[in-house]
Amino acid sequence: MLNHTSQEFMRLLPYWGYPAMFVLMILEGPFATMISAFLASQGLFNVGIVFVLSVTGDVVGDIILYCIGHFGGPKIIEKAQKFLKISGAVVEKLKAKFHANSERLIFLVKSTTGLSYITFITAGALRMRFLLFVKNSILGGIVWSAFLVVMGYFFGYAAERISQYIKYAGNAIFIAALVAVIIVGLIKRRESAEILKNNEKK
Image (tube, rainbow, N blue to C red; front, top):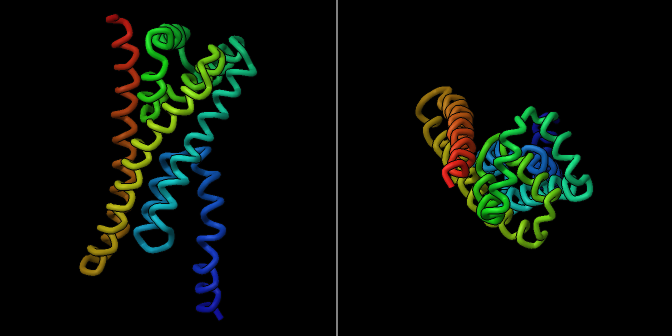
C-alpha cells in the first residue's frame, strides 16, 4: 500500500509540482529555481520546463513590482523604501541612474540582492516604458535563471553519482549547493553597491 502511494505521488508530482514551482518562482525565484533544478537532475522534473518557468516567474514578479510603482506613483517609492529598509540616498542614486541608462540598470539588478525590488518599483513610478522594462527583465532573467538552473542541476547530478560510493554524500552536496547560493547572494549584494558606486563616478 505504501509503495503504491509513493508511486502515485511521484506520478502526480510533475502535474502539481510545476504550478507550485511557478508560484514560488514569482515569490522567491533564485531559491525555488535551484531546488527545482536539483530535483530535475533526479528525474522528478524536466530541466527545460524548470528553466522556462524560472524566467517566466521571474519576469511576472518584476511586472507586479513595476505595476505597484506605476499605479502607486512617486509616493509608493517612499513607502517601499521604508518597508525594504533602504536609505533615501540609495533611492536618489537609483533615480539618477535611471535617467542615465534605465535599460542597463534593469538588466544589471536582475542578478543582484537588495536592489531589485526597489528598482522595479521605481521603474514603474518613473514611468519607464513598459516594453523596454519587460525586454530587459527577460534578458536579465534568461542569464540569471540559466546560471541558477545549471548550478542546481550540476549539484543534483553530482550528488546522485557520488552518493553511490559515499554514504551521506548526497546530503553533503545539497548543503554545499545551498552554501553556494548564499555565497552568490553575498557577491551580488556587493555588485549592488558597485552599481551605485559607479553612478557616483559619472
